[in-house]
Length: 418
Image (cartoon, rainbow, N blue to C red; front, side, top):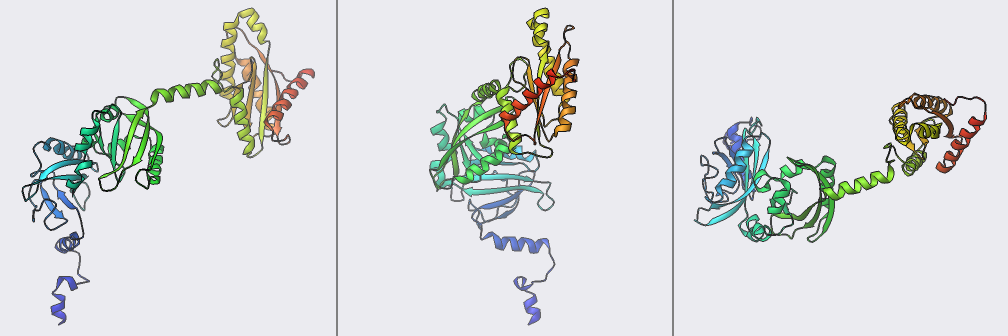
């Protein structure tokens, strides 16, 4: 009895792994699949098949057939382009929709995913997954395209995994490729990584049909560089292959204009340094999260700058201000900030800087001011220092204390006003 039981494959629980046993087990499992999964060699021939016993096209045995043998002639170039592109790039993926002839003679629409696993030692083939999407025809890319290609606004549809499956003519022009040929992952790879993660989170929040939102994200497109795209995304109705539908707008010009306006609002036009507003924002931020020895404010006033303008002219004076700004910046740490807050007034904000370090930093910065020379014109700097602690965590008060310290130093003979 034991020998009879041992002769039955399904009762052998301790048998060693063999390819034949693996295939039998996979075959038994395939009855639970609703899609066909094919292993395809580099000659585009089917070497193994899993899925319903008759496959999505009704063929009981597809081994040895060409994977595109039943594809409609009009759809063959599109399908062939996707498979050949995936074949040339290990680990790449692609998707396409194409008509294929069922064993009963009717044409079915197959939604197909292709993945290159030729370098996977366990598979060493293309993995092709096919789903009968005939009854999705109302929302298929073919019908979707006929409705949207005439629309001048870029429109895209993504599958339920978030990968693009279709883009209308305007979207293809914007993206520079056809997702039906290149595969949905090509667009995902073009999106900046932080924005890619934000987009995944955004799509996850659209749980119900009709839910919609919008987001701005950056992409790097071949031949067009970095662009900013604004997408308005809507969760698709159930029953079709699309998970989301979105309209796209190239907002690059608007983003660049807004960035320039923000830059002008927070930067000194002559020196490029942060202005008074940006300095106070930085100082308040440093005071709200103090670290180490505290925060130091060093206030500088250029001595003799009016004389430079009067003798050498304002053009020379402007160039000298730029040279001073460059000298101050070169002397500071990456965490420090120097700003131009008036005509000949500069302020350095130094986090993690106690009173003793602030004094030595001020002397070093004053030396950088004195070293700046344009057409033999030079200036010196008077400085004042305030630190918190001991002063309170108040940006306006720290500025007042540093300004007051500068005037007190000027009144004392002759302290270092280098």
